Length: 335
Image 1 (cartoon, rainbow, N blue to C red):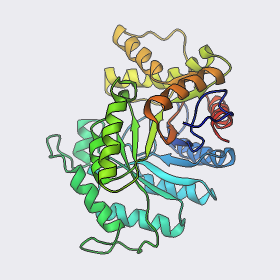
Image 2 (image 1 turned 135 degrees about the vertical axis):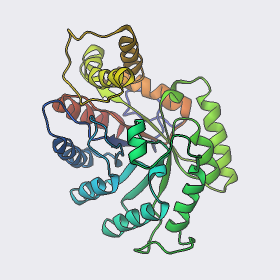
Image 3 (image 1 turned 90 degrees about the horizontal axis):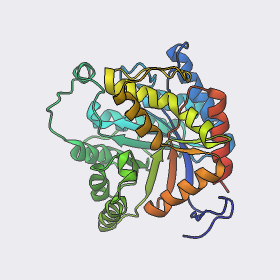
Image 4 (image 1 turned 90 degrees about the vertical axis):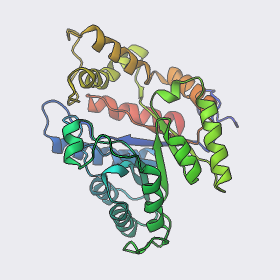
């Protein structure tokens, strides 16, 4: 890799891009609508800070997340910005008919030409009642690869019907993967967004080598986006505190089945042994600290993955601290 002097001496490819994924996290004491307004405002700031993309998420009937319809939220974000790419991280393809997704994104591209990305995933609903409401049986066959090919056929104008409005340019399609999806993305010749525990695994390099070989066999150029939480503050301890609200919400989800709104840090919070273990694991999977610490960790991550882009999926209760972290990350990693 070529060195980039602006990354505190770390070795980073000068072509590495920096982007944000915002999940419209709700906060205790605020209505859900406030989370959506915060998302749009964050996108405006991200554009000013020089971020490359701003993506939004799809979660259904989750108390801690207000975003259930990426295309609607993307339209709001794109209307309030001018240059930054706007996308989905992602549309969960098992929940939708491929033609409808193609029509939604063709419409977005017609309204905001050349700025729209389509990230697709394979996750089902968070709980059994949500999956039932989405008409998804738990034992339904995995048709993701076929659905992805059908979706692309409409976007590329080779489907049995023509998605309208007719696309004047390709809408980039990305596959969200936590491991298994790498092969699907590779065989389809598509860019991949990689997150979750697989980033920490010893064989992530081997998995990505296999993905890149599959993409090249498909006659395409590999493109790897790594996605994880990144929090920058004045010290490691201060950044760790910012990571706690998200970690506590995850611990609650693992033990109660409900993923709650973000809450402020409470040093007197009583946790079970299992919850404490989940919190420590979740915090450990974030990249957090001051600029020097974060630069070193990101440099090591990019060395292991040779990724093309970082998609920071950070959230915390303190909005001012989140804004400052976004700004510090942009100063750290943008030219």
